[in-house]
Structure formats: C-alpha cells, structure tokens
Length: 417
Image (cartoon, rainbow, N blue to C red; front, top):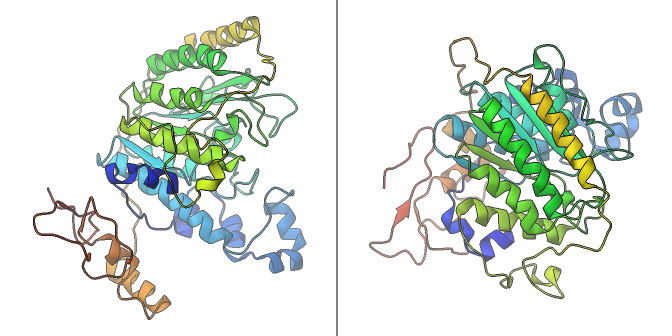
C-alpha cells in the first residue's frame, strides 16, 4: 500500500477500516471445530497437540504462527465488508488486496491459506444477487472456492491456471461441477511460459462468452500476481500490463467488481502490479518512474513501474489454446441462459458489536490512547491532507473552507457532501 500512497492514489479512494470477522461469521463457511482450533493455536500448542495440527494444518505450507487467527479475521473482515459495500450500493468497484486466499477448505488450511475470505464474500453477495461469478487469474487453480460452490448454479467459478505437476493438482478442463452445478465450474488449464498475447487470446473470448451466458450480478476477481514473469513460484510469463489488462477487461462490463489479492512471491512485483491495477480501476495513468517512498530501494536497479517478460519458451501452442477454448465453448452452450432464483426474503447483515462496545474494547486495550480506532476512522479530515499523528484531535494544518469527508459509522451515518 505504500506505493499506492506514493502515487497519491489513496486520495482518490474511499478508504475504510472494516471490522474484523468474528468466529460467528467465519463459521458461515468453515467448520466450528476448525475455527475453534485456529482461534487458539500457537506454535507451542501445535507441538503439544500434533494429532489436531495434522488434521487442520497439514503440510509445511500452513504453519501455525503467533497471531494467525488475528490475521485471518482481518483479511476475511475486509472481504465481507467489501461485499457488503456492493450489496448496499455504496460502491461499484471494491479492492481488498489483503484478501484472495483461495485454497482454504471448509475444515483445513491449504496452500498458505487458512480462511477462505473469497467464499465468505461470495456468500455475502448472494444475499442480494441472484448470480455471482468468481474469476481467478492466479497461477494456481482456485480449488477452495470451486469446491465450495461445485454443486450450485448460482456461482460460476472460472480459473485460468497452470495445470499438470503443479500445486494443487486440480483444475482439469473437464472438471465442470456436479448436480445442479454441472457446467458452472470453468477451468482453463495452461502450460508454462504463457505470454500476454496468448493469455489475452484465451481470456477475452472465454470471459465474453461467460458474461453473455451467465450474466452475473457481481464479479469477485482474485488477482494473484504469481502468474507474472519472474515470480519465485509461478511459471507464466505475463507482464504487469498483460495481467492488468484482464482487470481492465472485466471492468468494461460495468458489473459490480470486487478485486482481491492472492499469490505473489516476488514482492517488489506484487507491489508494482497491485498499485498499477489500483490505478486501472480508478481510470488513472501513472508515471512509469516510481516516486520515492519508504521502500524505494526494493525497486532497483531501474526504479520503474513495469514487470518485463523473460525469454522463456511458451509451451502453449495455438492448437492447444484453440482446443481448450472450443471445449469451454461446448460446455457453455449446454447451459441455460442466466439461471433464475426463486424469490425469497433477503437475509439480514451479520450483527456487529455496538460502537460503544467497540470503543470500550479498544480503550481498555490501550489506556494511553486518546480515542478508539473507530472514533479515529469517523473523524472528519481534509481529503487532501496527510499529517503525522492519528491521535491529534484536530489536524494541525486544517484550514477554514477545506473540503471535509466523513466515512460514517453505524451510529453516525455517512454525511452528504
């Protein structure tokens, strides 16, 4: 986010601090026993209870660490709150780069993912939208999300990923869903070294056909950057522009769009790409020379906003890609147009702690703090001003006549400007 701030994009965003997801919210998808274990697990406890750890946190890619549940509740809370913003008509485009943990299963962690914030966000969107589309451009198959909605026709999961001897090993083009959900799982298996042109040649026709056939009321897009060239784990050859072109293309459909983060293991390129895609979603153009920021040295030696392709071989032949697109086209032709949903009452939003309870909790945790996090978020501050102390009662450089903005809370609604 530091690069987003360095480019001044934060001033063009409505930034909110969502509440952390409660255990009650997390168990809307995850099992009670898994969440109970995750809420209390520590590295020490994991060693004392190896039989439980092997069930819930198996493998080396999901180790227990101090604060794991706090991390998960923050990530999932952001995705649930973002979905709620779309449901209430407060935003057409929402970003949570801290989300996108697509491998987590109902009762176990998987692939660096402990809680599946994407599934929780989609469940929230389904309260108000008949159909939701999930789109995944991470190099890994979005198995956790696909599995969660494998038997329903209300969610279409679409994943463009490396297939073969590669984690998680799922996502064959013939994996299409079962029962009522048959045909509503779309998998686009790709080979090593795919470049911008080849990717676009598959992505655009497939997504155009899906949008025409399924007509979703909202789109959740996982924008994992391990599909970029030079990623430490990935094996694709996409540039930053090629990756962002997918985001721009989905934005062009004018359907509410929720963009999430995901994988990415060359950190400087993760920051570059998500900052660039934030600008794409805002319709802004960025200077290719990266401005000075707290992590400026990480972007050397060129200090430019770009991810260049390598000279790796593209194993995706035109014949292979045409065959894959044809198979998906046949799958879509067998589907009915825009499946309807029987009318029913809209579920209420999850109950949250009152503002006073939240304030008391924060103030008890830090007696020296002058105000709670919620109270700071609810303050009216000049949009164009940044100042050092969050605890100042009044911005030190506030001036008369400045344009002020109020984010609103449950007891203090959004102020019209």
